[in-house]
Amino acid sequence: EIVLTQSPGTLSLSPGERATLSCRASQSFSSAYLAWYQQKPGQAPRLLIYAAGSRATGVPGRFSGSGSGTDFTLTISRVEPEDFAMYYCQQYGSSPPYTFGQGTKLEIK
Amino acid sequence: QVQLQESGPGLVKPSETLSLTCSVSGGSISGFHWTWIRQPPGKGLEWIGSMYNTGSTNYNPSLKGRVTISVDTSKSHFSLSLTSVTAADTAVYYCARGSVSSAYFYFWGQGTLVTVSS
Image 1 (cartoon, one colour):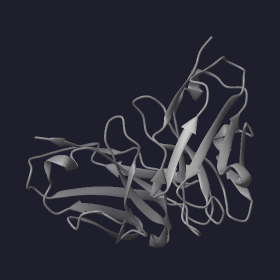
Image 2: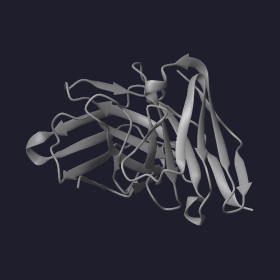
Image 3: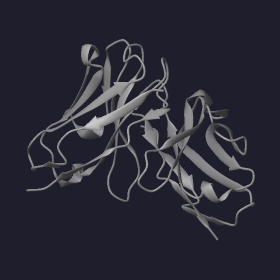
């Protein structure tokens, strides 16, 4: 099973700042199988990024994903007020179980 | 627009079976991956299992053979059965749709809280 570790646990930023969220895997896998989700309280997760760097339909351009091997990053170029939420990475490689990171909370500073 | 809606009991007794259904509207149930994911209160996301467009299934080994996922194409819904539940199974349960070939999830249900308690 691939374990995903997200850092930091909590990221405190002001609107307009750049956010960099990390997702590190316990073993290397294809970047084709890494997704990022945003979750707000009381809501289902929302797909932001798939295949490490492809934005899902309707996702603003300030969200971008990158990485390969064991290290992946979600970047929000300029954080907007509506971006404060939990973020999860997920790997969905050819061999289940599919796993999620434990999450990074993006909070208002 | 594809919409998913979970339904089922909100309270299940320990040792009994948790059964949930996900109704799919706005799109075909055929040809996609269908998945159940859960989230214990205040915690992260856990993949439970998936049924693929081939009809095959995969389940999380951590659930030790307690899980069954099935699809009823005639009713446009898919189901989750989790046997021998304990308090550790208390969670919000989500159904989700993967793509044709990959298990990332664009469409989600709103989630349903299932509490295991006597």
